[in-house]
Image 1 (cartoon, helix red, strand yellow):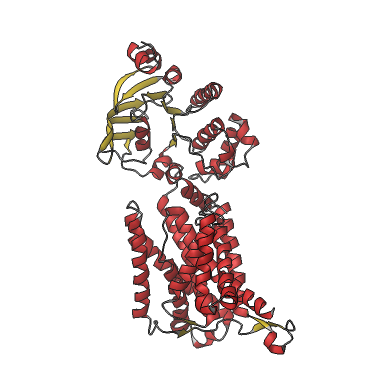
Image 2 (cartoon, each protein chain N blue to C red):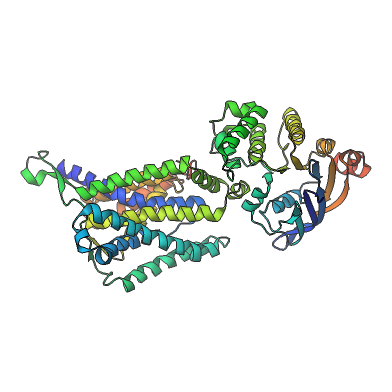
Amino acid sequence: MTTLLQQLANGIALGATIGLIALGYTMVYGIIQLINFAHGEVFMVGAFGGLAVHRWVLPESFRENWYVSLPLMLLGGMAVAVAIALIMERFAYRPLRNAPRLAPLITALGVSIVLQEAIRIWFPNADSAQPFPKAFVDSQITIIGLGPDGPEGDVSIRASQLLLVVVSIILSVLLQSYINRSKMGRAMRATAQDPDTARLMGVNPDRVIVLTFVLGAALAGVAGVLYGVDITNVDNAIGFQNGIFAFTAAVLGGIGSLRGAVIGAFIIGLIKTLGGQYMWGGTQYDYVWIFVVLILVLVFRPQGLFGEAERVRA
Amino acid sequence: MSPLLEVTDLSVAYGAIEAVRDVSFVVEAGQIVSLIGANGAGKTTTLRTISGLLRPRVGSIRFDGVEIGALAAHNILNLGIAHSPEGRRTFGRMTVEENLLLGAYTRDDKAAVDKDMRNVYELFPVLGERRDQKAGLFSGGEQQMLAIGRAMMSRPRLLMLDEPSMGLSPIMTQRIFDTIRELQSQGTTILLVEQNALAALALSDRGYVIDLGTTTLEGPGKVLLSDPQVRAAYLGED
């Protein structure tokens, strides 16, 4: 029982991280039908942006107070992630806007490798685990008494896990309401549904596409920093694994659907932790169950759980 | 005084295939002008080029005396040209109201936008009654009303309507044509593309026949209506 609760808590925290990344995958796909495989690396770059701010920008006195250092690290992570996404959209994807769809897809894989290598070269020792500051309340909530075996039976949830879940949910809701209510959100939905007619309404497609990349990158940057704070170390490969999970979450939820991406991410987080705990092969095989579920869903519901019928809408 | 819209020797190609060649016509302010012709004659291509979705290969498009052939679609709307595209193309997963707001996307005068929206609801009461419903739930005729209303929301000086009667019942077609006349009387200049040549010419100050990508005949609507060539080709008489 305690183990189950513990893994549920871990799965939800993992799902929160993946969800923030998956939103970027699904939004970009909704607007330009591109699977931006480099988006996982934007998350990774965001984490390093936060780390760089802590290491090289923040004065010693700031680092001790998480309520000063964490917001600044989040801003740094977002800024770096957004800058990278802007460069990537402008120079890698925009020239291929009218090319066959395979061209930007292969380019995305290329951009992904470029970003991983760029961080490896420029950030000292980024290819091995770099300690990440615990820039948040370093405590955990312990729920006692659920098991007969004393402290061993306690369920503990790190404060940083709670932070991840809360921030992820708040940002998802904010994004949803921005896209549903604001004028630019309306332009994004129009472009997703019918780009030519959106242009006839006076919508500048470049502005919509740039905004989409910026929103996705900002969320990935936040995810990167909070992931670092929670896991307490990062390297230049974290974007690959989490990016694959997030992409899978977006497909599982129905690519193009915001709600689908978030729900898909929580499902994947739970499958990974519960599968690693209870299924044959333990954590060595936890990946396998994610893809087994993905395959099963796609066999019976190829558009994903919330696919097509509602795209970028809700 | 230059005409509101002047298209001269326009040619447009999709890759190697020339869909429009040497199309020329003039739309004077306040008029209803229709382009008629068979399916595939190049009428839709002509409108899509005027609104900037396609680029002219050669030729000129002048609006209010200014060459607009090289402008992007989103800038052309700002000059005062609205385009209600073939097949209506309403945003089916958005509400009526959101569709109309998109029509006013480039405007910032919220009070005037609200007023124009009320005007659309007055013109088409069914849209007002169901303003919170998704456009995809509406019938073809209702979607056509929405497409026209949406195009009017930018307060265009020139309204281009591509096949507004397509797929509609005769009664609904009549309503749409009545609306077009009403919009003209309110001061909007209209460029109409229609396969329903009879109804379009009866309404038009001027008509142009486009055949195989080229303007072949022109004249006042009533005159074209009685032209034996037109009657034979487009009105099914011999």
